[in-house]
Length: 562
Image (tube, rainbow, N blue to C red; front, side, top):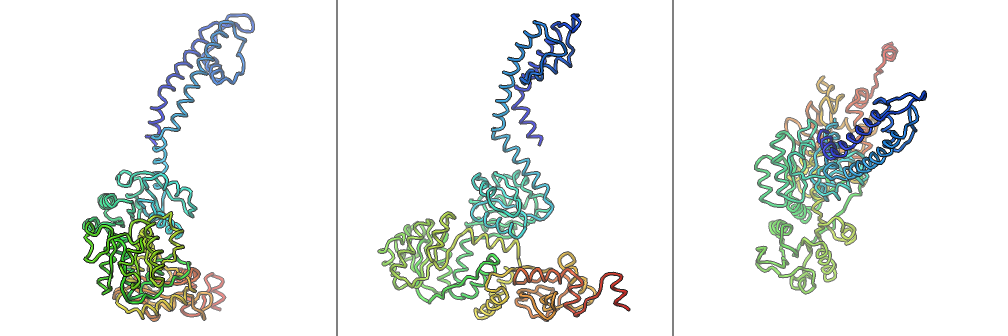
């Protein structure tokens, strides 16, 4: 606020001094020029009345002469003063209007408002650096879960889209360079309620700088960064960045999983999706050759994953030597039928359109499908404004880097046990994953399930915590009993049980809970709400475990005992 006041005083210094000088001279003149009272005696106006008259005269309100009619000398002075004061006010008003439009002052006011909004936060929040395609998806998802966030974005048009967005929560935002440590401090990196910082800018170097700054200014804060470069990714990990998300490596791994373990792939997509949306399906892919268009940062990890899985891959690349493409690469973009024919597209089972141009990628899959309608198509989608085109392209898998990163980070922030569960699933085969999928279909009613974590602690599960610390045995199956009707179970299933002995996927219902245990459940929102009663309410917990409801009031206890 001191900066705002300083700027206002500096910009208005000349107008304020001029007004003070003019009003002083006008007031002093009226006190010096003699007048006449109502008795015809000589009279001189005092400073109070003179200043009062000059005040309404200068603003042209015009209350009249006071306290007595003026002499000609006084009127002449008033006439001169009124023109000078009005001209001075016109100049001052112009200076004020110019000040209001001053970009420096507007920025100072915006920073002041942003700092105040961040300072007033009393719940855990995340500092999001970058509000592009990835950042907007992440902030929207967090807001729907009632999780607070602050945003720093260098492009004003993106901040405008955040302001105009229909957010259920107020999101403090600042148009500034997130690479500047001062802006990160404004955004709350040192705030006691800051739960983490997420670097999602368009430049890996800035994300790296944000990660370093975060670890210097607040070593205990969780840091999550996006990195498209392997070198930057390694650098981030070297100084302790908690999570580094590479959209291209992440998608390449997912695509490889989709080809050899489709149920494992579906499981990942469902558990990282938005709850309530329809469950997606995946078309089975026959074994055979694949055509990969584009051998850049996106195509290279896909090529490596497919080759590692023993799949034959034919690469199409317009600059094979510059990209160090493998031997036998077809030179071209893949948008022309002749190039695809040279790559034997008619004998392939799938195609990846992975160039960095959305138009080329759409052209590739359209041309390829005309030559081979049975192809399994994977297409890269870079620009968010082309979303409608890709949604209507009928591609089997659409890879949007922003969506891949947003899903991964949202999972890390809201349900970290999901990634832990997915890592445990790698120890099982695809048939096991198919069984989990059938269970999820049943409990979520063919919608992407609601996921929630349960910690057996006093803060998150007071009733259960007091019961287990008091020697009572509470099992997972008891948490799934409906607290309104003990004969029914809620639509929920435990995916992970983490205790002192380790982590267990799809735990059995007889597993006994202990203080400090963590669990991951999947089900419906209604089931989650129902379970909250059992976790927090002692009466509800007693009912689901014993079938009895003990009165809580003194009168009820007396009547029950008698």
